[in-house]
Image (cartoon, rainbow, N blue to C red):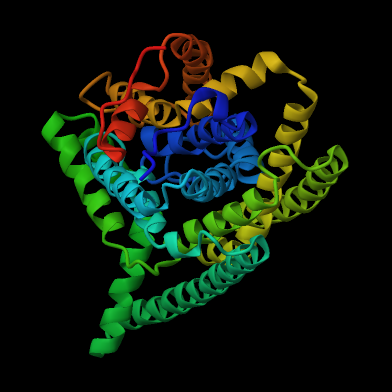
Length: 428
């Protein structure tokens, strides 16, 4: 039996690392809102400001970043499934593939659970590892089949968002009617009372009062125990979602697309320059149009909840178009070797993605919670992006220097050692 080991530096696909690094940095553009503000990710009226620079920040992220970076990262993760298993089978280590794949993702889930409860309630490692377990049987399918599977799930997500929008609109409408009846002195039926309570809970969650926001801010700025309690409630909710929940369909769809695109050579910068130019132009033309329309619609509605949910019906069209446009630009730059001073650090960040991802959480948990500087709720939305730029600058500088001396990032080293059940050499 041929022993199978982690990929060597000279075997890596640099364009895939570059794309991963770009997506990882971009994810912080959205995560920073969750790190620093209460319940303001989709609704800036809650906290952080919704006028001037703050409104401009929300609109810009909505059009170019929200969901797009997670989309890219999920596609790259899917590509990694094919790459890992394909390399093992090509080297005659096929009998080891299932064990390695299973250990890799079970460890990722465990890392993710600790990461979620201790540092970042919006973390993605746990659901990635969970979803990856279902991808293994699909790894040998043809690219076309994988892309069709991804497209079907995208359509399923759109249908789910449409249904969610109608359900929310119906709940709010019937709940408001029940509220009016109660105010006029009419005794409500059990069904009316239930729909009234659902409406109250929905509105409270979407648009909490200033008092509730300040209460949450105080908890996040509190002691370690207070921070763990409020974070734990959020994590417990997300980690208990059904395997077939629409949020998991989000990941599955993009992972399948990534598996298919990798097999077509799209992620390895192997297609023609014309292909990538057309991909970028078409992606930006469609994506910017769709996302600008939904941004305008949402702002005009004053961030009305059903309006936002209905806009999610075209969410995947807008985000996938922009994600593929970003991909086209990056692959073209990788082909041409342009802007190497930017691409090289991005590639290094992509090689150490796990360590850099957790670094985001360590820095932000220290800055915003009461365990550190307690800045939660104290910065406006646009001010959060100065924090992002600072973190980016540090990672762009440190990651290439680290890889001059070490084969892996520190967390990558631990993950690989556990995956292959053998301590890996660290220093070059």
